[in-house]
Length: 155
Image (cartoon, rainbow, N blue to C red; front, side, top):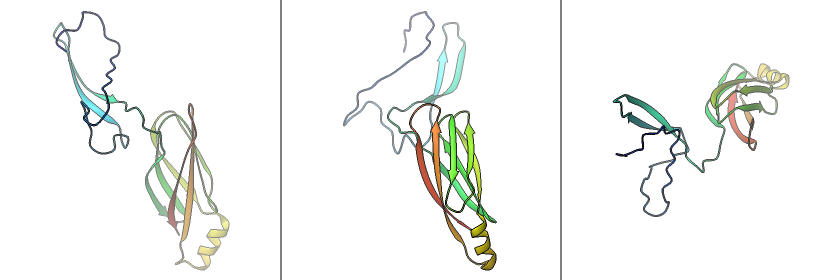
C-alpha cells in the first residue's frame, strides 16, 4: 500500500470474496499446519521490520493430531498436537490413564502402560502383541471438547 496515513496501525484484516475464481488460492489443506507469510514493513523514517506473520484461516475445525505412535516394551508412546490450552486425557481398555495440561497449542508426549492382565498374557506368550486402542479426549479452556483415537501394537 503506497499511501497509508501517518498514524499507528494496530491491526489489519483483509477479506476477499470466495468463489470459483478467488483473488488468492492455496494448494492442499490449509488447515493441516500453521501458515506463515513473509512480511516486510518499511516505516516513514526508513526503519525496516522483517518477520514471518502467522495467518489464521477461518473455518478450520480444531483437532487433536497424533504425530507419532510407537511401542516400547509394555508401553505405548504418543506424540500429540493439541490446538489450544486445555486438558488432554488418554486412555484405553487395559491401559493406564494419563492426563496432561497444556497452556497453549503445543506438542505433548504421552506414555500409556499395559494393565496387569495384558502383562500376564504377554508374560506367558512373549511373541504375542496387544492391539491397544487409545482414546484421546481434549477439553479446551474455551470451546467444545474434541476426541480422537489411534491404535498401537504393544508387546
